[in-house]
Length: 77
Image (cartoon, rainbow, N blue to C red; front, side):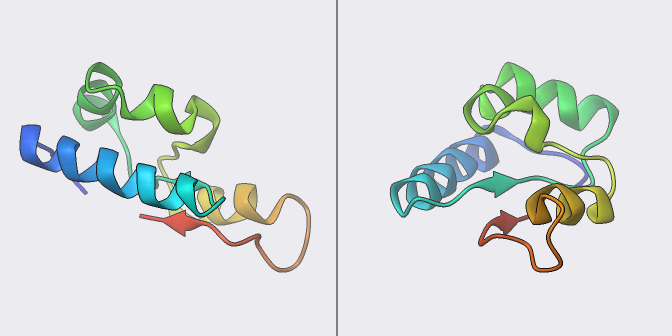
């Protein structure tokens, strides 16, 4: 994901609601610079937690695994 507009932010909030409603967690990967800023201003980072936003996919997967070989169920976008 390289950029996001207001529609994209709205959809992300809907996805977060759905995943959290099912007891899951959302991790975002590939989030850098201006995109991170827009997600922060749009409230996405606060909703999922800044510790679940990563610049690299492997970091998100590693965080989801929590030291286990198999990650816990999570949506990594």
